[in-house]
Length: 76
Image 1: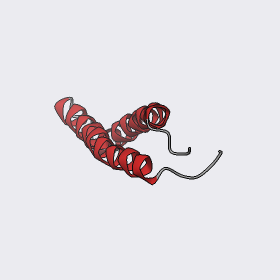
Image 2: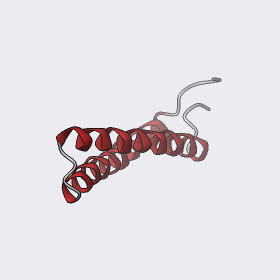
Image 3: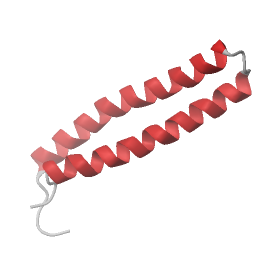
Image 4: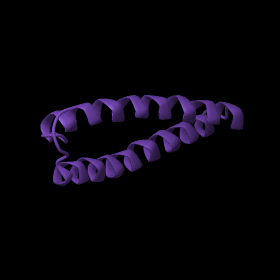
């Protein structure tokens, strides 16, 4: 990491990450709950599906972070 931090880009990227993460994890939790409810799989499977979908969401957020930082560099 070289140089000083570009705070404008940092604030932009963090703000977008918060917004997108709220949507991604909201969808992950809702999908796990809905699928388990639709097929009457029970509470335990519901939590497992929510966890799996959340892990997938975390993976997507990690990729989104890498792309966002490539477009809006945090360090100069």
